Length: 337
Image 1 (cartoon, helix red, strand yellow):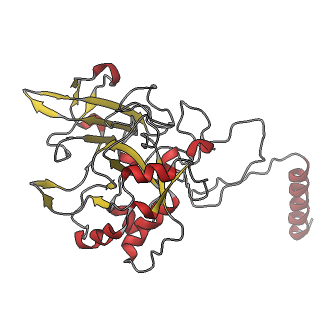
Image 2 (tube, rainbow, N blue to C red):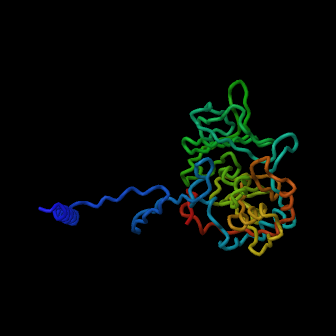
Image 3 (cartoon, rainbow, N blue to C red):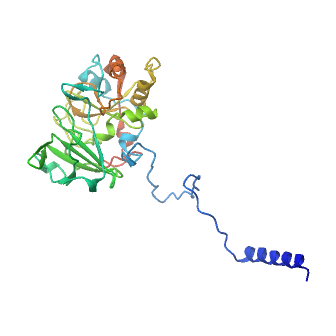
């Protein structure tokens, strides 16, 4: 038989076999390829979102966490005017972080990123042990520690994506001791037990609320910011702890405020507009007692302190409190609707 016809017959037979019973082999999808979206099953729980802020390839809590949820469309809280009057309607905002030193130490709350298995782990001694996680806590030699009265140490373990936060820490004779400590799973929305403190008075984590210079470089802050006021009363979700009993007209721990939508930010430098947009979209969360309207961030030599002081023109009157209760899925979770 002519070789040409023989090859044609073989090709036809192979195609027929493929059509009848040979499975189609789909090559694996490369990581850069667009994934195929499966059909939605309304009876199953959707997978957690992964689009939130990160540090060293660890999430700063799930994307649907309270810290990472926009609040620009939430209703104004019924106590907004009273709370702002209590804090100070005419008082100026202050960015409590920057470059260089103030009073002998860095400006802001630093943090440490470590591979947990490569640094010492300590069973810290706390004077609030009944509201602290026992540990152990990985703490590197000569850790970055907050200068000033609170002496926070914040540590992200990149091997486990756990966050370790401690308050009022000191080291003596091989032992770390302090006020309190909290351990957070950065892949979880779990809150502290109700009424428990953390390394912060509100019982909330500190690190997800800090302004970081890398976010300015990226051009977007995707989370709420931590701030302090002198007088607080009670606490509301997702805060877990109070320093004073509830009092009408005084803001509780966990209260959230936003820069008013009509505040004109166009005259500020682009770097500061990143910060101001975050205050509008994600707001600021009351997390500790301290100076009124002091917003927290991490020290970094790249900060331009003069530029940060341009934000000192903002006052309490430029903000409004929002009702975040509409976001709550469960009182014991930081997950939002």
